Image (cartoon, rainbow over all chains, first blue to last red; front, side, top):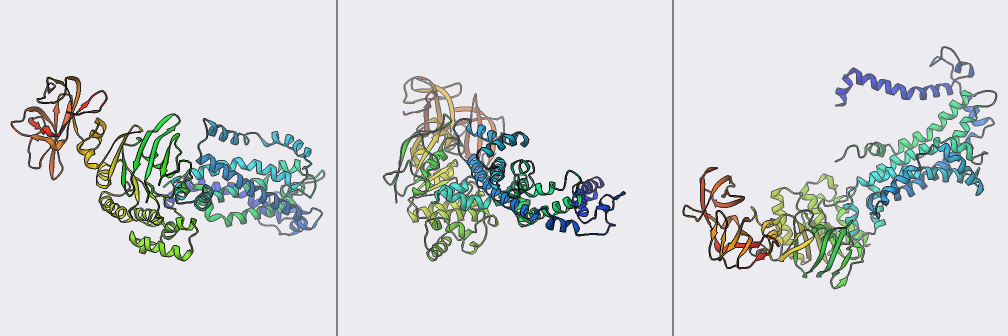
Length: 279
Length: 349
């Protein structure tokens, strides 16, 4: 099937275009991160014929910007909010997939959960800022953790709901008749089967939280809670844009996500195509 | 060892009744079959015993204990699902072991019991496989092993044989009956297959439209149906029905005139007769036209057109006729049944 498809020139060209389209900015970013300032602005652009330098990486880690600290902040905020969103969202998704709700409540509840994602974040961020300042949470990691968790729960709930719907409900019914509790059958039977879904959902959550910029800019002020995205943006200053630094720090910031994607890769492909192919 | 008592069970889904006013006592060690067309409420009734559905009203008693409000795990019943519901991520061994693991049975004892049970259903060589690596029949046996190992008070089986091919189904039917007899565990079995019901059951409960139509032994159900539904549902091919009226102890319509019917005059009556009780012969008192002919090997079914009614007659294999030719036959008057067309209840002669 695949082999045949490659024989068709249009399909082949489309694939080449898609790969180029997605990877070019990424590769260009990496190449910029190894260039000195002069090469970055060279016209025509130097793609490979430049003298590589590690200066930008040295600058990222050892100049004034406490980049390492920002990385740690991002790690903490992203992992805690992802875990919290996964736990709460998975339980919500399970409930929506399995239980009977009175009247039309299930429909309204599902829609309401989704509707929280319909507003552009900029609409939410000002009230959220006032809310957090009222509780003295501005410029804390907790503020971002709460905000990201709240933002990710709807996503997790909807994703996991569809994964749970694909698991026959006889399985946990059988487990319950066999002597297990509802929670026990969920943990022992349903969760192991939903692993691919959890893997796919968790990586989406991680990416969303890790890459989030707007909330991070508005809800944080100092290195106590500043995140990686904020750190990258520090390259743009009043007097200049430090492209080398931004490319280097962006390249570094991508690495953790890639590592995680490799770890869950086995489940990821199944998770992403789950539901598409049944049986 | 336990009996199961249903007391006026009613279950509705969004105001649509699935089971209505269901009362019954299942005896200890009895093999009870719930039989009916799809959507008649038989599976819901079973799920109420398992605790997977809660009735809107009424009670379920297992072993004289009211379990209506008990969680499934506290009822000590074991269930075989139509889809088998084997846990796909566990091996055959782990699947069978699961109920014991939940009960915290020590590991060594668990292993012994799994091996012993696996032997009973001939799964010894397959214990390390995953369910998807098994054939349908083997999966079925795993599901069976998983309920046997529990030694529960009641077995519940929801169409357990419907996913097997015809030959295997006959084999497993015999195995089930034998196993139930050996273990002596009260069993409630749901099926829409009347042959399964007839062969397995001590008693059959025929259900229709959320209600019990008749509860009797297989023999009674077949030979003494109490209403039109049971008469038409049980038997293959089904019972023939002829519409007519009773006048002066005669059942009459445009084609039929059966005398000596011991029923008072009525206008709307249905006469029922099974295909094997119609005898095709040259001097038969009823005349019709051949509508179709079906050979089955050991016999031939002839469909006879009689005005609005179409009758099936079971004839000898060597019977020869052609579509459209005239045909005459008579009915075995000891085996005819009369039903009121309005209430659909049997009218006893």
